[in-house]
Length: 123
Image 1 (cartoon, rainbow, N blue to C red):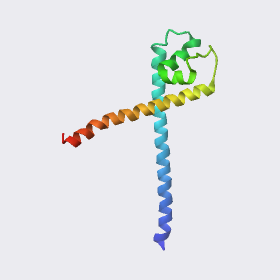
Image 2 (cartoon, rainbow, N blue to C red):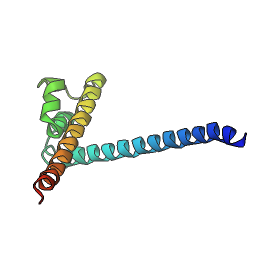
Image 3 (cartoon, rainbow, N blue to C red):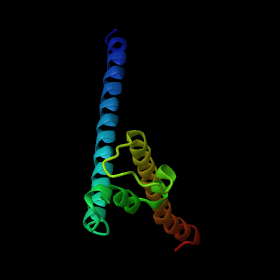
Image 4 (spheres, helix red, strand yellow):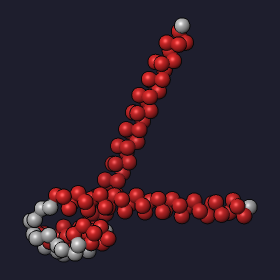
């Protein structure tokens, strides 16, 4: 009788622990992505966009972060100084995240591929 009662309880505990681990992993990943994004933004602000007027600097920073995403979202049209377009800003942010994920995946494939080819050749 004890074994049958412990089994559903044990399953629940395992599920809760797994969910908590997944949440913690997602939070760490999000923080890492945010940190990378902020570092890139800062590099653009302090580097190539440092000489731009405050009103136009954001356009420069977005283009510096990703020309492809900037072109996709803003279509080459710069925002006016002080103009805020939240929908486009969210699209740009999503595009950046997607671009970074794709780059990381490509980097992982590149790192793995020499190991696989040397394993096949016996090297």
